[in-house]
Length: 196
Image 1: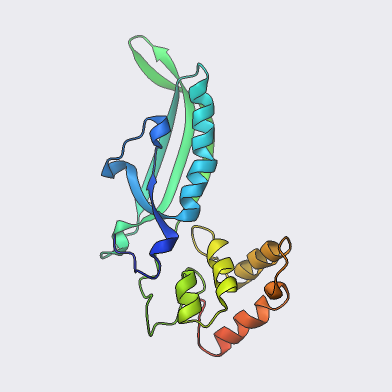
Image 2: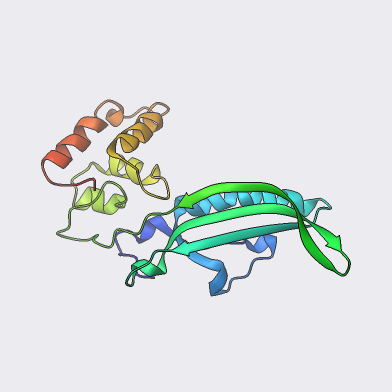
């Protein structure tokens, strides 16, 4: 995949249907996705799928992926994912859909930071911790908090980023618990980072 080296730690090969639900390791069942998206699959639909698999129900697990349009490398990456789980019923010699059990909200995904690297101003919306620290001059522990709490689609706004950090620091003692807003605002004002 064409993920910049400084952003690659935020990404994983993600199975659309996990091996535990009989998904394959073939390319058509794999997408590049941020760690948060992979965790979402593991902790939400895969857990539900396993629950129904353990019972007597015959279920369908449908995933639809829409990729970014445009030129490579953007069109290698998923823009949104829709997922639904439902029951099946026997109709003669074949199976048909019966009841929809769950339809997850559309997962919207942000592109990698293709502009990452030396001499480039990191975008707080989706830059990795290394870029935030090395190019953006954000303290390393704050850079890690920003990267680790980022939604898979990136932060929707600067206010969303600050709200995520407020929640994060409400449970963790840290010197940044009271200074993160000022540090971020100063980094933006000084031109070390941006939010676009």
